[in-house]
Image 1 (cartoon, rainbow, N blue to C red):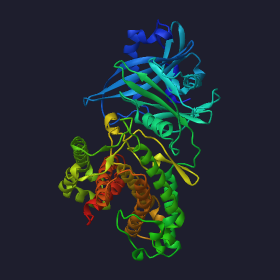
Image 2 (image 1 turned 90 degrees about the vertical axis):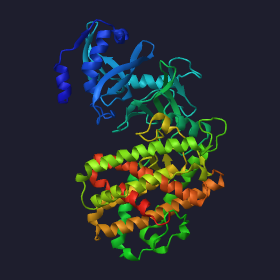
Image 3 (image 1 turned 120 degrees about the vertical axis):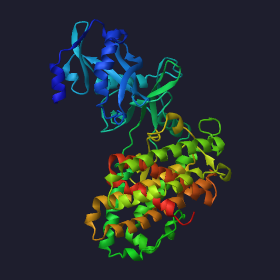
Image 4 (image 1 turned 135 degrees about the vertical axis):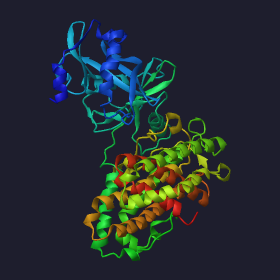
Length: 545
């Protein structure tokens, strides 16, 4: 038992003269629970996203019952207010247990209610709660009009609960595997709207029959006091997999860079290719195929196919206005520029305030970044919607190799929540599909540089030589992906613009993504800031503007 749990066992339980079923109507309990208990508990949870801000107070925005027959749990919607004058909402389901064997994890408060000693715990740690939630989804009725709305789909074939377990060490959500067949993701950070992950999962698998995302099986939404649907949980099929594409790519790249010495490849003589030039595998020079191997390029084509199919599905709806394609317009341009200029200024401040933490190449690039800040800012201002003929659609929004599962020779796309820093409304704004493509390209760049940083000492080359080889490889990855992606998109008449428009949008979105990444790296691991800085400066210095 942990020291924390030992202290809680020794702590005298708080006493309240209320039944569990009425406890949240007890004002003394609520005041004590919010101020003296939850402020300490919530700030220590992995899913708490306010660690860089100063908590002011927590309010109980509202609560609702999650129940079946006489079995009652509570869902709490907590409003966490910060000194910096903003707030966040979190979902916390709670249970009362009298047997301490059921309260081994995440004890929130030792308590005595109506003379019965026990513990209030995070209900997700209680198997009885997980069983109840599954059964409520299984028995959901169509067109539910109650406040807590359970829903299921034809993909939910199991009717009986058998087992459940936690999926793993997640940060922002908590996922439970049910019957070794389904995953219920409980959203911890919540918003006054339906979650994009829920919307996109329903749309892709239920409406469009897109096969390469985990099929939608069910959900829990609540109607809040303002009548807005708020997503609490999403259930999908568990896709058997061999891990995510990020780990797969790192493993492959380690072998690719190992081939440089094993095959005695002269890096200075490796043929290059133009950035964003679409390539078939037959267009890739034999020296590159000999170095990298054919298999990795075939995998990139498959990933490009699944990405294109996702966008084709998302761009083929003409009745549901939330998913109907739209053209660029002035409103979108104003929204985009305001958002990006604010983000850029934030990153600029972070770099200026933390430049002393950098050294070597990272420091050189950061200084160039600051020198060229006006040029970078002008790149964002230069967006002119009147020159763009392509369409905007609902997109993944946070597309990278970590959001892709590997299953044999195929890939499954998941986690459609959107960028963590974005508001819920911003995540639902229709964007050019090439923004997702730019995200996966930045992920390729990250994987190449991560390999050099983590394993560079294993190769008999200077870091600069490995960087040079990595940049050549990066361009071929982009070219082969683009060759397959653009071909499929055009085949299905999704308008992503003419060639120069595509290149403009890709550069624009990749610059946006690299600036976004820069904030994370400067705050979390400054030695990796070189990766987004390399990405920013390569776009700025690209001669073909």
